[in-house]
Length: 268
Image (tube, helix red, strand yellow):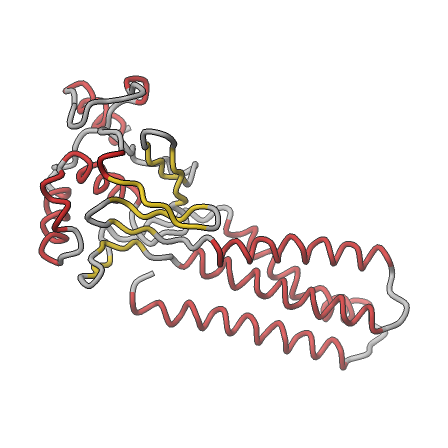
């Protein structure tokens, strides 16, 4: 998300937590014999949260063709988008409401074992997903030394010289992944939670892989404007066809037929 939306991210999370707590408090206080109202009070927050998560499955966001510039780092930053904000808020809503639900049912003194088991199972699943959103932040940084990417429980640095020229390719929107091909492994970066156009991101990384002379300027506003203009004018290096990537590819090697393949892929 852009700087003016960072406060909104925190507000969504605070609002989701407060709403779940208030809803749970009402469920504690209100004692009704109406089945539909009882279900609404006890299961409503969970249904809303799960429904929001299900709706996100079809969301294919594409942000601006630009980075955030951090001249202090220095770095070009790809921040989290609104999809991750809604996802995290929905998980907070589900977790808090399920905790209150389980406590309420246990407090009645005669809880149904199946109800408790299902609630605990949903709570464990939602809690695990929420923990992952905090431990694996959706954020990407381009630095003079390489690309800093989030990985399972830690952040990795993929150095420019370790990346294969001609990659990454423009990611397919259906896969929701950008693949960074290093010498020893492929780093799969989720793009559906990043606030940037995925094709611009792929072109920018491929550009710095092919042009080491410009890497030292990463993080400067002037370099950011130069990069955007260069890519807008069609200056992105061609993506090498997947079938033609050997295990070790000499740095800086590109082929004209790769250029033709790249343009044909984009127009298709």
